[in-house]
Amino acid sequence: MTSREKALEARLRRKLTELADQIADAEVKALLPPATCTQVKLYVQCQQDRIKALEHEVTCYTAELDYLLERTKPSDQLELLTLNQANGTHGKTPEPATV
Image (tube, rainbow, N blue to C red; front, side, top):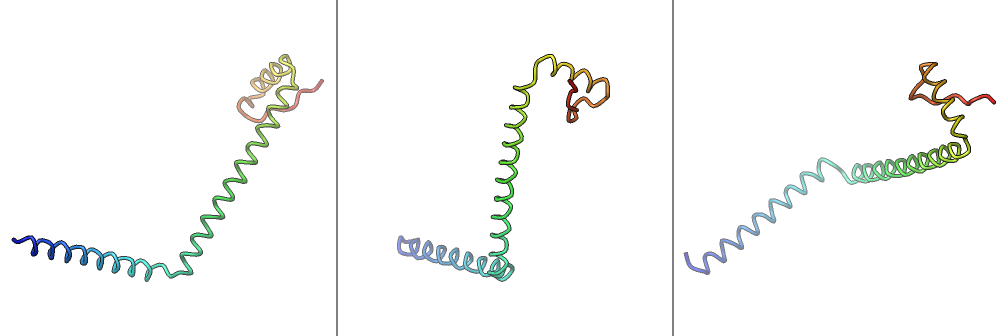
């Protein structure tokens, strides 16, 4: 095969690949009309915003918990742990200790 034939074959292969890509894009667009694509993008953005809000909420709760733990005396923490274990609530939200 001459270099001219090889170049022509390569050009034809590129053109066929390009046409196949265009057909595939057209098929995808036929399955997902532009309105649907926009809806999907909006849904994804809403979910990302929701995740950010939940992360912020967790950060706030963690900061509040850290603050409360700092204010609680070690003896009170031990008492809470003992009460929770006795009540079978170990691992659940501790009840406030009465002073």
